[in-house]
Length: 202
Picture 1: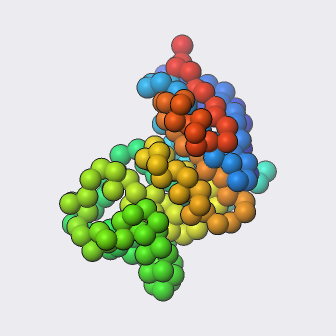
Picture 2 (picture 1 turned 180 degrees about the vertical axis):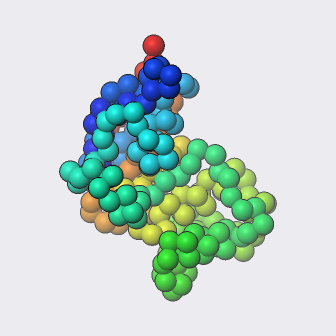
Picture 3 (picture 1 turned 90 degrees about the horizontal axis):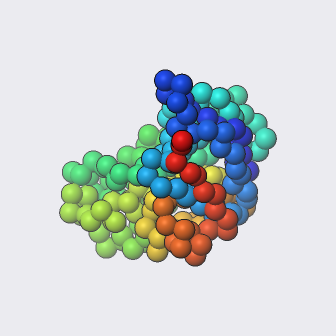
């Protein structure tokens, strides 16, 4: 279980995220909603250790992630908002590269990469350069990369809605949970077990 307790981020004494708390329980798809400028991206960056919180905790199975950051990152799958990839690689080559960076075995990477490309309707394009992909296709490659190592708490951030259920299907371990950020409550109501709303800071 992923638990957020009192997460706060301040810049020059102004809180852009103020005392945020929520949980992502096993098997849940949790939505994190809010308008532009409400601090959703900052919250996600703190959870994924890209920036340090001013105060608060992120816990996984009851333990502060800072007690073993390497182990936490091994369990995490993160999809950034903007689909920035190496455009000269093919979709399959990109996933093979991500697998090598995560020190996965070549047979495992080959099997899992092809499974994910098929799952996200990219199988016919696996050998095409990413430069020829649409934005939606690039997002699906990033989702595939986030799931390549079988993470236990993936974060399919702003993935195309028609694929969010597929993300849940792709995560096989019973302890998994999924977190998704967005602005549209009607979208998350169709795909999420529960939602948290983040209001803009005052």
